[in-house]
Length: 331
Image 1 (cartoon, rainbow, N blue to C red):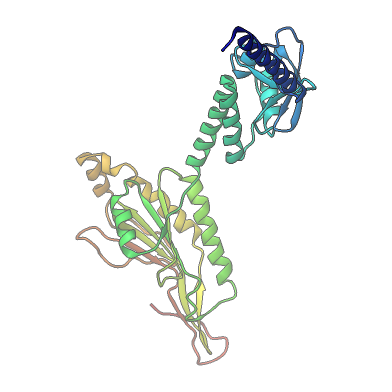
Image 2: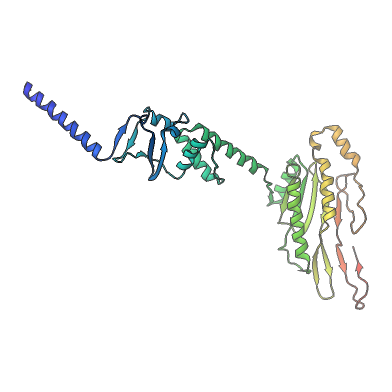
C-alpha cells in the first residue's frame, strides 16, 4: 500500500469518527463525565421526571453521588435529562430520604421489598438499613400474632399435645352436628364460647397453646391439658327432652372456663422444673373442689390422677304429666 493510500484511509477514518460522534450527540445520548459543575440535576427514571440538586444526590456515598462526581458515567438525552433505566415508582421516596434522612415506608410487605431493591440498586445504605429495620419490626409483630392450630386428625392432636411444652386448651366446636334441633339461644351461646376462646388466646398468648377441633362429635366442649395429659374438661352442650322433640342446648359457663384456664397455668413450666416441680403438681391433688352450681366430676384416668369433667345440665327431661309441672333433671 502506498503512503498516499494510507493517508487517505486515516483521513477517512477520522471523518467517519467525527460523523459518528455528531450523529451520537444529535440522537440525544452521550456520556457525561461529571455533574460537579452543575447545581441542579434533571433525572428521567423510567419515564418519571425528577428535578433535584447535586447536593441532595451527594449526601450519601451511593451510586447517585458517584454519578455526580464523574466516577460513574451517566447517559443524558438532548435536553439534558439524565436517563436511569429503573422504575420511577419509588424514586421520590429515595430522594426524600436523601433530603430528610428519614421517610415513611409503605406497610405492605411487597411494596417494602420493592423499596429495598431500589435502595440496594442506588446503594443508599441509610435507606437500606431503614427498610431492613421496618421489615424486622413487621416480623416481630407477625411473630406475636396468635396462631391457632386446627386439628385435622386424632393422631395429630395426640402428637401435638404430647410434644408441647406448654399447657394446652382445646375448644371442640362443631355446629354442623344437626342430629337434634337447637334451642333459641344455642347459637348465641356457641358464639360466646368462640369469642371467649379468642379472648383467652390473646390474653395468654405465648404461655398456653390454644387449638381448635371442628371434626369431633361434640358441639361445644373445652379440654385442658398439662404435661401431655388431660386435666379437665368442660362440656357446654346438653340434650333437652321436650314434649315433642329433642333439642340441643349450648351453655356458656364463662366463669368455669376461665377458672380452668387459670388452673392449667400451674403446668406452664412443669416439664422443665424437675422432680421438685412434679412434686408440686402432684401435691395439688386430683380432687380439687369443683365449687357449687350445676357441675359434676366423674371418671378416673391414669391411676390416682383424675380428669375433672364438668357438664352443664347434661340431660333435661320435661315431665309430661301436666302443663306447668316442675322440670325433672336426670343424669
